[in-house]
Image 1 (cartoon, rainbow, N blue to C red):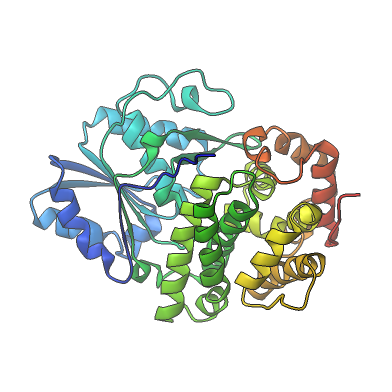
Image 2 (image 1 turned 45 degrees about the vertical axis):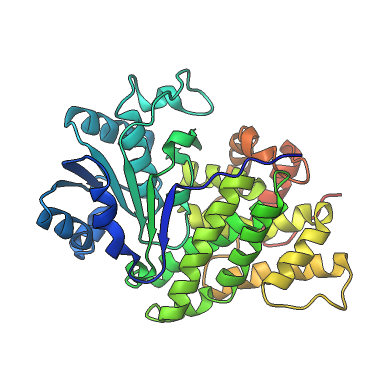
Length: 392
């Protein structure tokens, strides 16, 4: 059976890869550039590393900083309208997943009619038909993988939805771990576990292939062996580099194989309680993997080995149990709450969370174990109680 494998046309990775930005911009016939970022990056001067070289080369740049975590649909609508009204030639996204996702929207939908809402996956009625403006994406976190995917995630009233099309792929991704040095420990932890979740879910996905498997396993190796150090000592250059590469590879893996149950259940946590996406994935990761364990024991054995352990003397079942335990331990080691209670989510909310999660059919379809409404509620309740549950 043939497989479609898709990558961003050009990626630069590794320390000081930002130095390639000007050469890449010069390849396009542009003059007026919109730089989408969040206010904190402007405040600490990180955006100057992008804007100043471009301005010195004669380009007109404008910073757009109305970016918030887990951006609601209204933020996307406002940015797209602004991009259309001001006739920009290029969009450069600088920041975490929110800034990058919004940049993709702005670049593509600037050349389309209608609202962003018209293009949403679950409820939209319009189709993307044009590539739009050239886009360069520069992550300053090691986690979302947004720089190499064709998805833009937006928060709705109680859940999330996406705009997705290959035209949302960036023309250039620049993944420079030097830009992540200033990232606080809490954000390093949440985004790092987000990347690990991408790799784990890509590896167990029903759409996995030998190519996505190779990317996912190497991402798991790099992230598992670097995230604790990156969280405890953010200035550790090797840890930051390994985490950056791990995030990039995980992004490529899940873009081609897809994510599954963890993300389906995480979206309502962000939508209803505004929990950061990385934290939502992290708190659910051990509970979802524990529940579906029996459907992917061999793959979880591989994940256990990739995390740096040896399953040589273990059965697949034994190794899969140990894998779940190590995922749970890793989340705890980087100081992310291990239960929904830890995020002040009441037990009364579990039913509404379940109702929203079951609507994420596009994502749930990739789970190696079919997850119905009762299964999803059981997983949420396990994450609330802090006790791993299994499919009966």
